[in-house]
Image 1 (cartoon, rainbow, N blue to C red):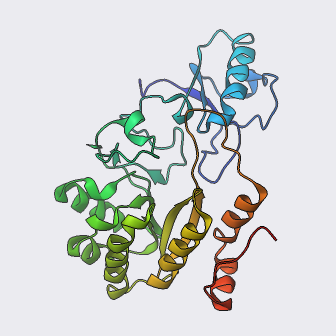
Image 2 (image 1 turned 90 degrees about the vertical axis):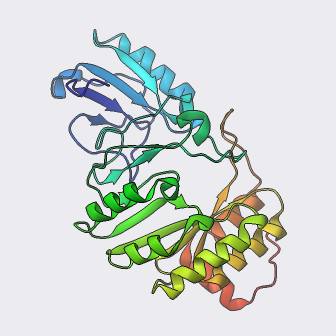
Length: 288
């Protein structure tokens, strides 16, 4: 991308991640084109779509906006499997949210990252306190050390992309102990990944971190009782689980029953999780 271009970015919805500068716009369901004269001068319009269920809406936005401007109107993003090999801070994410690498060398069947970004590629390091890399721990030690050095000037540091448990080692723990860590997000997507997760979590606890800082993405959506057991084991190991319903990235939004949605919500709110675990670890019937 030409960094000299001024780009008006359109996002279907405003989230905690999307930028808030004067060239960011959120139509929030409105199809009609805005008054482009109200924005600072721009060279292109980019409509950024993260979720497949917003694709039709974004295409309609593109058609409508192009009718009211001579500037190119482009639509893309993860939902359109757009190639993402580089990273420009503040363009499609808030400036404090950064990628220091793209891609992942794993081939997990439920993950779209390798299809969009390919194998892991290390990027120039930009300042920011939220590391969103899809697999930061696959980068080499020299790269990690440069990131740690950048982070020493940051506060409320979060590793949000999902740290691969079996790659957490003494080098990583020793470096993050000297940082102002707010959250460390691990991933435990299958029952087979539990042993590696438990070992990593125990290392983090020994390193001085607790459940307030250790979080864990837990993939659910196939077997509710098995999923509940894995969520409980994550909690009992010393991390706060966060349930993620498996989504199909090749079609529209995956629909789940009310029972599944209630189950997921139960395991997405720390207060609810703590209360549930204090009541006991017996599997709960969410159909009632």
